[in-house]
Amino acid sequence: MTHHIRFATRQDAPALAKVQRASWQAAFRGLLSDEYLDGLDHEALTKTWRDLPARSEGSPAGTLIIEQTGLIVGYSRFYPTDDEDDDPAQVGMVGSLYTLPDVWGTGVGRTLITAVLDAMASAGYARATLWVLEGNARARSFYERNGWHHDGTVTVDRTDVPPITKLRYRKNFDR
Image 1: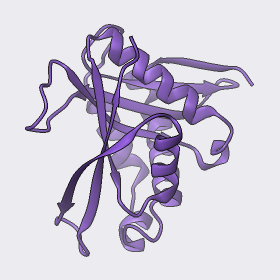
Image 2 (image 1 turned 180 degrees about the vertical axis):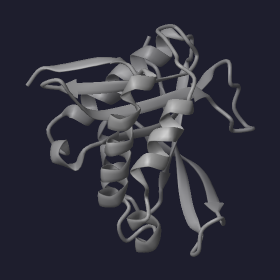
Image 3 (image 1 turned 90 degrees about the horizontal axis):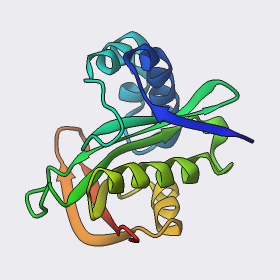
Image 4 (image 1 turned 60 degrees about the vertical axis):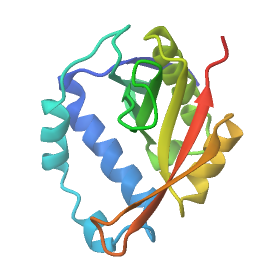
């Protein structure tokens, strides 16, 4: 199947919200509260996406989308790291990578993460990091199959009850 990857625009906000809601509800069930996941509001998510600044190729930050037969089936955001132990001029962070559950296991995620890493390398980053929920075995396996490794860094987000443990994954760019 042919995929088209491009930078997101504000007009993509409703489709991005749809992907975010569907993927979170499927991927995080059992990891986050049902009340939180069931309460994800499409209109509120759409507004959040519309409020994000537009980015373009070569920028140190942006949102890439992947389309399949004209429909947005996934997205990934990247930006300079905000981790205090890394240099934001050298290390970019993949802040999100989500696809519709219908395309899980079809290669869409691999195509998207490859495109995001290419965009990050073009923006001048030498390495990439991301955070993944400790209990998200599916995501951890995906990243490990694609050359990422847990670098030993762990954080606990206590804004939710129960607290959420996140692991930092890292990948150097092949240049």
